[in-house]
Image 1 (spheres, rainbow, N blue to C red):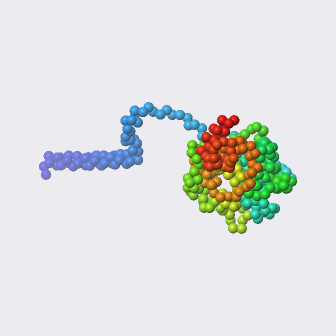
Image 2: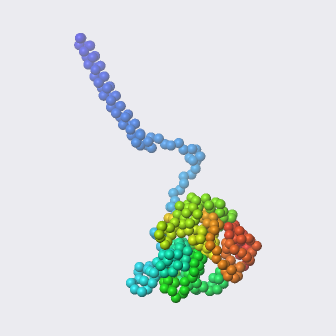
Length: 359
């Protein structure tokens, strides 16, 4: 081979080697770029935004509104007096017995009661949750500070003794206790104790039941039946019979209608009370902060449950002044022109407006 040919060959081979090296480096760089684009696409691509959105002014940043306090941090909610803070002794024993009677009424006073057999097998805390201490759970916060007081239902002043026996005869569809009995004295002492720190004329947040909006229509038992099947039946039974373990004196979940449930003179037989109670507390696990029912569902399920058969009570002495009957009292006669059906299911706004006008 000639010298010039040798040099040309060497130059060609050198150029080829250099090209291969450059190509390899470029390939590696390209591969690295592709990998990085996959990992960090937002650095290379912007999602398409419609012109309409682009033309809108940027939403100013605002400080989020403070969230409603949870039950764990709700310092403004009513809290019952602390039974555990009491020293050991006769007073604490009596109060503890009163609480036990309210939490487990059937065990002592039910059909298989160890003390008396005078009630239907439900417990007081089936209506007054956590032995009357739960916020918006139909609690006892206002009893000590408001009784004795005049009640339009009886047309006279009532004391706590009368109030407790009203529940015994209506919600528990049973017989009254004597005032001097150990059980009545214990329950009255406990009810007075839990609300002892509430001042007269004060209504702490969380007292009683949670108010909800009235419907513009009548509450519907038919719609309520669907709600019941979806959200209530699993605990309270298809026929509202409740759930009770074999051999137990107490219901795990109380009956909502039928012979063992509250009678038609009970407070929960007014659907406004039932709807408020259900909205803040049912199904199991619901709270006033995290409800599981809408207002409409609460009204409708109340209408369904209270349209089912249950024990009757003689109400002939109730409401001696009929003008004082609540807007949803389901039994006439009335001081207005609305019939029993509307008084039971609504719509209620017309009735309330007529009552206000009559005043």
